[in-house]
Amino acid sequence: MTARPATVTVRSAWSEVPRSQVRRFTALAMAEAPALAEEILREIRREYPHLPVVLDDSGEPMALVGIRRAIEVFVQHLESADRPRVHPEVFQEFGRGEGLEGRSLDALQAIYRLGVRLAWRRFAEIGQRVDIPPPAMYELVDAGYEYLDGLVDQSLRGYAEAAARRAGERLRLQRRLMELLLSEHHRGERADALAERAARVGWPLPEKVAVGVLLRPAREAVAPAVGQGVLLDMEYERPHMVVPEPDAAGRPELLHRALSGWAGAIGPPVPLADAAKSLRWAEAAVGLMERGLLPGGEVLLCTEHTEALVLLQPEELIDDLAVRCLAPLAECGPTHARRLAETLLAWLETRGGAPEVAARLSVHPQTVRYRLRQIRELWGDEVDDPDRRFELELVLRAQRLRGELGETGTRR
Image (cartoon, rainbow, N blue to C red; front, side, top):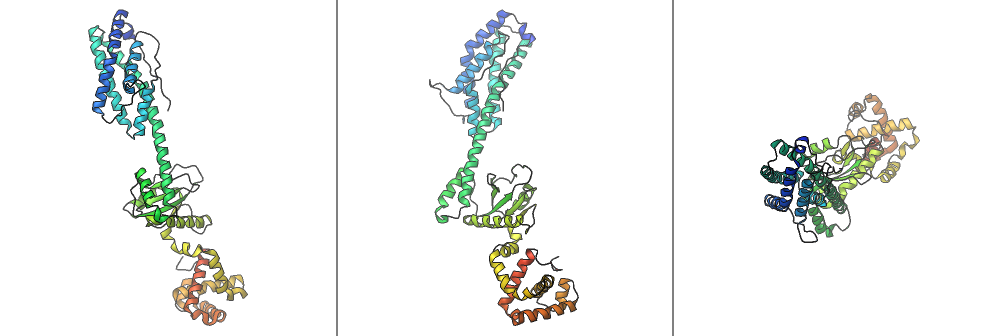
């Protein structure tokens, strides 16, 4: 924000007032400036008792100095044709103080309106004493508001600087809170530190949380408006968010709307102390998305993809088990081996006969009978052992999730 210099524009009606009257007006106004400044500050402090009193090196309130100096500069230039350029630091400091305290701009502007109203009342009385014509006084009040705009701009500049500093500080504190929350170390020792950091950012500690990991869109995007209470850190390469009470009424719908156009995953709801576990599942889901093993282009809920997360995560173990369990297929050609594997999985899932398996695979029952006989020849009595059947179904389901086996009719 660029501060606009405070200016006075002296218009035609005022310029037609005799110089003697103008000098009398300015002399009286200058003489009353100290008392007027005190009156304005006194009324402001009565209306807004929360305002802090900051003293300068001489022990005088800085606000009083700034108000008095602003009045004097305005009055001094009523006799000249040039435009005053006044930049009292106190007005920037005043705006900065309001921003740091988190108060609204409405209060700041209301204070200025109060000040200019009191000033205009005093100037109107002086104008009547020296017989300044009403048109000239009307132009004077216009010039006063124009001058005031410049002072307001300076306060707004200070306010914006403070608001940015305050937002930056809150983000820093929030990041420290998330780092502790998502850490897996010293869980038992961090409860007090967690409560202290949460209090500093005004975040009520929830009973349950879900942690999300986002993938940045290809195009530049602003941070999603995830709503009050959701902690969001965009500084990570993959932005992280902590969702309190993820199953609360309206929360899922709000997140769905806010995350439109984003991709990523939200881990399962867990107790607050186990937030790192939810993060781990969300990161695993994002990894599978990037490999094309989970749907992309949206924010997934891990609870809706449990099978894939359980079966596709321990790849080395599943691959080792597959080598042992599916060894009988090694002597078959790739196409025939895949058909036998699909038939075996359909049989294990249905626990039915040829007609049920045929319906699931959309093939003729006689074809299924032929394949089942081959399966019996390849595996023998192992297909009757409950543990071996479980292992076979496990590795075959994992292969289907990877796209190595075709979908069955039911799953399609």
